[in-house]
Image (cartoon, rainbow, N blue to C red):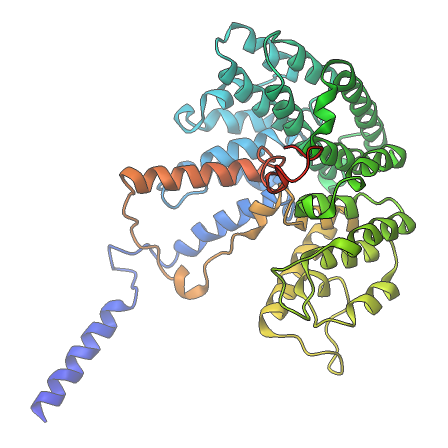
Length: 452
C-alpha cells in the first residue's frame, strides 16, 4: 500500500512537471507565446496575399523587440516591404529600422530609401565580380515602386547588355528570374490595396510590350535560348498572366506541344493548362496531354496532379458542369473540392485528409477573394508552383504546442549549415528566384529541344 502511494505521488509529480506554467523559466509566458506564433502566421498570410501589407509595420516593431529564435525573420520582412509600394514612404522607415546585419550584400544595395530600378543598376557599376552583380540584379527584380510595379523590359535589357562577356548561361538565368517573378507582380495588381495605386490596364499592356521587347532581343542576340523548355514555358506563362496576349500564348504553346509529353515536367503541364485563354484552347491542351500522360505516382483510381489542374481550369473558364462530370469518376480531392459548394450529405464520402485540405483551401480562397483577387488569381497563388506557395504552406502549431515556447538549442556545424541552406532555398522559392530551374530540371536530357 505504501509502495503504491509512493508510485502514485511520483507519477503525479512527473505529470505536473510536464505541464507548462507561467512561472516555468524554461517556457515562455502563456499570455505572450500565442502572439509570437500569430506573428509568424500573420507574416505568412501577408506573404501569400491573404492579409494586407499594412501589418508589416507592427510586425517589424515586434520582431525587433523579440528574441530572434521566436521573432518573424527580419530578412523576410525587409523583402516584403520591398514588394509593397502601396505602403508609401513609410515602408522605407520600417526598412531602415532593420539592422543591416540581417541583410545580405545585395539587399543592402536594393533596399535603399527613395530608390528606383535605375538607381539600383547604377549602384552596380562600381562592383567587381559577375556573381555580385548577378545577385543584385535578381534582388532588384523583387523591388517594386509606385512608378514601376515590375522591372521594365528596358531595364532588363540594360542588365543583359551590361556585360560583354556574360556568356549564354547568365542571360538565361537572368531572363528566367525576370519571367518567373513577373506573373506574381501582376497578380498583386488585383489586390484591394493596389487597385487604387496602379492603373491596372496600363500596367498589363506595358507588360505585354516589355515581353515583346525582351523576346525580340532574345531572337536577335541569343536565339538558342528559345530552345530551352524552361524559357519557352516561362514566356508562355508570363504572356498569359497579362491576360492580353492570347496569340503569344499560343505561339509558345506550339513549341511545347512539339515536345514528347513524357519529357515535360509537371510545372510545364500545369502552366500549359493555366495559360489556356479559352475553353476550346483548354480542351486542345488536355487532349494533347492525356494521350501520352502517365502519372505513376498516383494510386489507381485517384485523381492525378495533372487531372486536378485540368479540373481547376475547367472551372476557371466557367465549365462547372463539365468539371463535375469529369470528377465524378474519382473520389473527392481536396485540391478541387474547395471550388464547389460545401459537401452534401448525400454526395460521395470524403476521407479525413482530403476533408482537412478542402477546408484549408476553402478558407485560403475566401481570404484571397475578400482581398480582391478573382478565381484566376486565386488559382495562381494557391498553385504548388506559385512563388506564393512556400509562404502559404507552413502550418502554425496547434494549441498544445502554443502553450509555451521551449528554449531552442542553437544549431552548430553541419546541422547549422544545412538548416541555413534549406531556409535560403525556401526563401528564394517564395520570391520566385528558383522558380524556373526547380521543376524544369526534371525534363533535362530527355529531349534536345527541352534542354534546361
